[in-house]
Length: 210
Picture 1: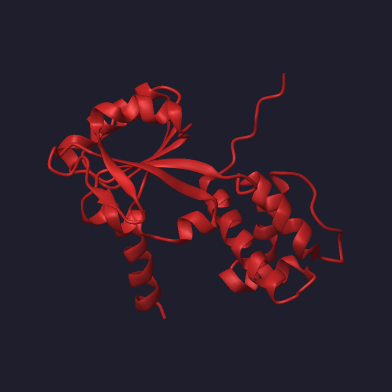
Picture 2: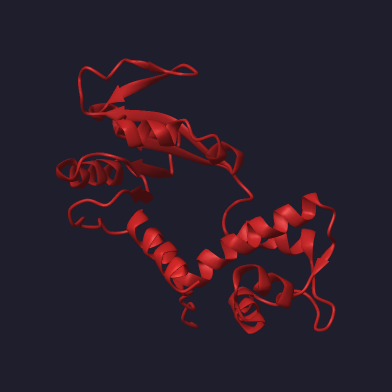
């Protein structure tokens, strides 16, 4: 059996960029685009765009570019954006509530359907538009009832591992969390750390080398 090709993380990140650029072009009525035009938007070489796409098959025709709508649909399917995902949020502090209120998630098919917090004073409080904060001991039942596939953790560092373990035990297979202490990743779980520091370093590089 042929081994599955490991796709570089950087390529997957770029696919997401390509997808959203194509979506903007589609709204403007643009029908075709070349790898060079995509590359120019993100400061890449055209070869890099073609290589990123080649991991997933053949797209477009040589010398004729890509059909914007078709390529957007294919990238959406590759990224799992052709369906909706149920998400739970662990941690109803400032960061957690900011994410809960972020409307762009829903527009992209990511639906926050449950919020949990370990603070007994917060459990039972109702968030607009009507979602009640639940206690941590309700995670397993709620995850199963609402078919939650993704968890977002926004808790203090000392509580992060316990939150990861609870979500994993409940059957959540993908978890996004903010920088904290080192996390042990349960087997079979896709874990992703939000690192705003890296993004700020990228911006500082851009300013320094402008």
